[in-house]
Length: 486
Image (cartoon, rainbow, N blue to C red):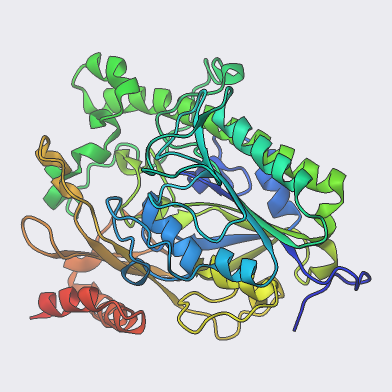
């Protein structure tokens, strides 16, 4: 059934504005209770819409997550499992299906899938990771060449320029047709180069430390692979901009970690401030143009991010900060069923975005899409929803110059409402498991897999993990799980 805003039947189809940040941990948003800064514009979407408290990445790293977004499928099916793999642009995506149904489609900002965007009437995307200041953009109608090179130079700050491009496209589109625009920001991905207006922001502020900043990994994984975790630790990171600070460290783990944390989080949050400002610019444009009355707004990130938790930065791991996404969705006023400002505890994820948009656009969701439409949840119905979420991170090629980077191995796992089982099948010293009771151990510091009293819950979760691998047709994962059982 086609959705229409109440009281205005002439508006037959919804429009969509999908905003994606890069590496935006939800602890750096105030609507999720973060104590680091205020994000009034992201909060506004939550205040006027629905906040999803348990939204997850299927594979917590950039390119694979973006491929899942477009297809609604896990990475073994959509073909981008690692950063080194390119997206098959001939496959089915939700922008293609929208366009075939008469929608105008556009994407601006970070693409990061190597091949030329397909299914869009217009694109203006960064080559590769792009630059924060005076970046280049590759636009539709121009030769594509290699995805990480080329483009037209534009002067300014990339977060502002991406929003400029989005507003320009919205202003000049064919007004008689419905639209979907994807606004993909580079921020707050490293390097943490802030806008000139924010260079001194937070200069003298001392930020609260996360409870696990000084985690010693005692008596649990990742202690067995401590050497291989070096690249994820704040004090051993490879980000060049922090080299001067790292060179001054005194060798005291506690003090050094605290020093690096403060510098790191100041720079990161400066990027989040610019990001939030530009979310506000886009929301204001929708309001002032009248488009807000018939436009769904979605805000999320491609993955979560560590901001000092467990002494880490970066992502990939299956700990909460890495896999949980900020996800807020605002429906047009006439279509709201849940009251504005509602929160959902349903287990949802990146693979659910494509079927949600197709469903809200009154289009059939293809049978091979593995995600599920969030429309029932947005309308207050969680009956029959999933009770566990499946995760599969594939790692990447380890750079030969640094043995520590061998840590980029596979991680499988299942997250339920109250617990989590993590499986490391390909580590140097053999497979191992982590099991966390999230009700009693929300910070994930007590691996219960070695506790005699906890053998039954891991066994049940192992069986659940195996069944989910089969359900999602992840044959390689199923073989790894079966191999560990022998």
